[in-house]
Length: 101
Image 1: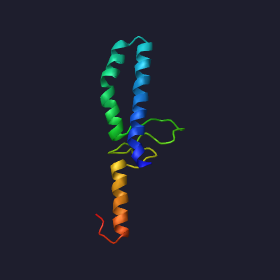
Image 2 (image 1 turned 180 degrees about the horizontal axis):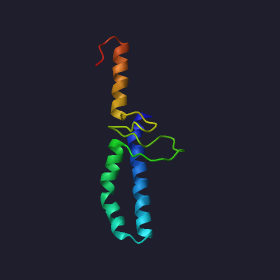
Image 3 (image 1 turned 30 degrees about the vertical axis):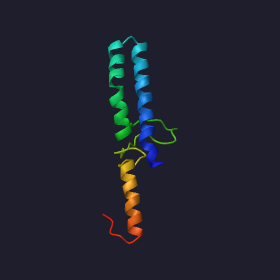
């Protein structure tokens, strides 16, 4: 599931931005709504790379882990997809007799 951490977090970030934008426009706060739209690309990219922490207990994959980093205070480890793949690589190398490091 590690390769899904980043895209799942980006989807969570998109949902968060969309809800924030909808809430802002529905209350008449157009400045905040347009600000959310303007910052949406960076929020989505940040979610993809670093995760997007949310509190939703019924999610299949917690979106707080990204490609580069995770969120140690969540159900995800403190490293992202890259860290997980590196640990797998080191474990296989160690099992094959190489010095892992």
